[in-house]
Image (cartoon, rainbow, N blue to C red):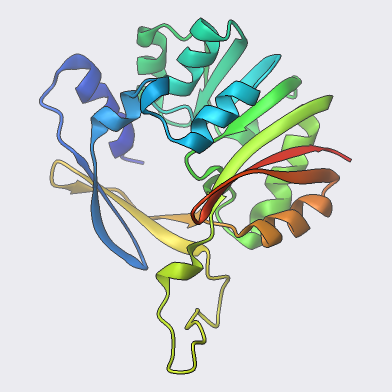
Length: 234
């Protein structure tokens, strides 16, 4: 794994001639992702992120912490006990250098079964599930690490709008897979990461999956095609 996202975060923090990341999916063209965006503060975050951070409480696990911006806000402004989790070693090192007190470099499926009051999964948190046929594995793990009165705050986007329509208005979606399953590519400094499978979920599909795995769900916020959901144990 090349970890180009982690390398970009590392370069930006150290002033090592950082460049913008380039991202694309199997259904969209290349788009620029300024590395500075990953270091934004609370005022620069979108409405979904801000609401999730305001709702966070107790002992928090920040899944896919990246450069640690969410963790730092919760730790320094909200005074919560936060663990920043990411599979990227370089990202986790930058979290530490920026002052995040507790960090773990691991896949969430490998996390020791300690309990959390809030599990935070932002910036298309459902992406970690990869595909519909793997979602139960992740939800089972999340159920194990969540306190009985805890919450999972997770966001996603219904990307149906990105598909073409026929003359009758029908949406031309893939016949062999759920339309929210896409291949995700990252480019950085003329290098390209091996594509990963990334999952965008519409709210109803997420609702069915979590209810089948012992959760209740509520939609906290809708922002255009994106939404924030709160999961609690049933």
